[in-house]
Length: 486
Ligand code: ADP
Ligand code: GLC
Image (cartoon, rainbow, N blue to C red; front, side, top):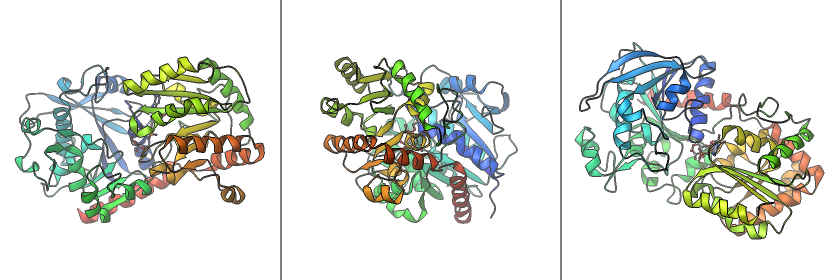
């Protein structure tokens, strides 16, 4: 069966709204699928910030949901810079507010998240069934992460219906809510069952996607294996193992239109694999931004990411005294856990000449770290795919990563053997411990001090191609399988 019409259901998409990699994927996979001549439309909540970022839009349909008093409008516009149609679910009481998509400015989850994403998922169901006055019937409904997990569960109750695919970008975020909350959601009572969406006494949005979608995917082959084990399965490993024949790992791609050192407008100097020495100007710029001494020779390590346990920033904090016995500078860009933010700021006051930290979200600076650092550190405890190591490869900023999830699938360790073979693209280490991290950085520093192999690895890294085209074809195959099962 050929799949033509795809409804892409997501809670964030760059450049409309972004908290992490899901937005990068939702802003670029649909573009790649459109290039493969598919009719793909994005459905997203009408957060205040997203409405503003979308610019011109029209009111496309007025909708109602049983159990909710709200008038809900579907707004139609385009993903900026593309011809991809975006429908924003405008329920002002739920989405028109300042703050982030899931939490307020202080980082506390919105207390009505269960209701907000129930409304979103039920509207997705209406659109999927062509009951939203849009005159458009998708062949596939592609849901992403817990915020859309209820939709496959609702659709599974209806026939005929389009086939469903659920992609897990991060299994640790599950959308868990109490029995009392569930009772206020006006959902079918039988969804509260261990065979449906009940999970150890809570209502689990992600379980709706995992248990009911026709096909499942996650964002790297390695993470697809890992989540079937107790170590990474977050309690869902048995269900995932039962459905393992329907679970595939498809590596995320990079949007090289946005992440390309040869064209990046945020860099002091643009460069490619043949002009990497120009990177020095970006290093200088970065040292200036972070108020670190200007030194072209000292190795500079960059980190960008959400400051949460997953990302292993605490491992870095644990080795700072030993690390700064070496000649090295470190710059960090991130926001998240308040305690990690504070520990980082304290560390900067201890090592002002060596460590720079910018607490906050800053798209431009993320590019400048990629363009200016010599190495990019990702000591993640788990990493479903990870995008920054893929960007780092293209920027010739050698990734130093833990062998987990997508990191294991995208970076080739610079062992002597791989160096000799010409396949090395970074440094990979095994244990999520301070010792192991320090040892990995020492290996990276040793390589840095050998200009010839160092330059060769940079050249290899910059040649790697993780563009979306290949992954988009794999998604089409996944859609075909889902449609043949649905
Ligand atoms: P995750 O989705 O787990 O956060 P990814 O590596 O897949 O991790 O994607 C993270 C994305 O978010 C990257 O595009 C990264 O540059 C961006 N990002 C994360 N934190 C920040 C920040 N503080 N400022 C700017 N960009 C950030
Ligand atoms: C998640 C994961 C990250 C992945 C991203 C996009 O947030 O933590 O590893 O790259 O989703 O799929």
